Length: 371
Image (cartoon, rainbow, N blue to C red):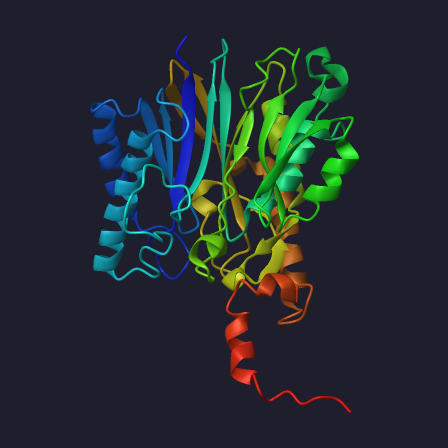
């Protein structure tokens, strides 16, 4: 049986204005080029969207994860977008394009990537999550709650097909290692790691062996690219994306979405240097303006059949998330009153990857030894 792959590839190729949103011309160019890729059968289906100033390419195909032709298609879209952004004088044109030569995959070249290859079920709901003004660890809490927290996901308690739990693949992005942890039995170990969200990030979630679904096929995947590690200096926040499958032995759609009702604190926001609330919004409200934020998350829902995408449904446009948005605004107001003080501003360790070291360099030699 031919398996389906769903891929999200994203990049900031130019903000309009500043870091607020994506220019309509970039969305148009992306749609036209992906339509050509569909005609040439590189992909089966696609949808172009944005979250903040990030251009988001959602594609379905049968070429598998890290397929050269799919990544090259996306790379060419981002290059064309960069060219148009430069022509229009958009801010930070080509910001996430950190290499001139395509090497077979966009991994390590600047754009973010989340992909899943799986055997389609009779009904296959898939949600594409897209964040702006934050880092990959922002997905740690909602992915944990969706797949491991029975207070969030009732299915873990009342659905026998979910009792066995899930396996979390966690990356240490400082040491470039990973570990697989089983829930519920290793839940405390998992929380010990992923609570340190700037270092340990959930990369994928798998079913356990013996369950209803194949254990080698992921049910969730997160982009883990960190731009400062690729570029060697601060060039923008990572703005992660993720994919998650729902229903029939997995969290229900509402259980996948429920964690985002918290508006939990994440790192990023202005200049990638502040903590702030993650606000769930529809695409129409995914423009980051207050202090270049607050950080946003968009969720687009699809039904996948024969590798074709039916949708999307703009899931966070639902008024059920009005309270979360109101709470995010309250938290944003409170955090902003701290100005340049922690905990609104990030801890110095995390500031090492922003423009903070340049300030310290200018003060070098002016510090005097205490007697």
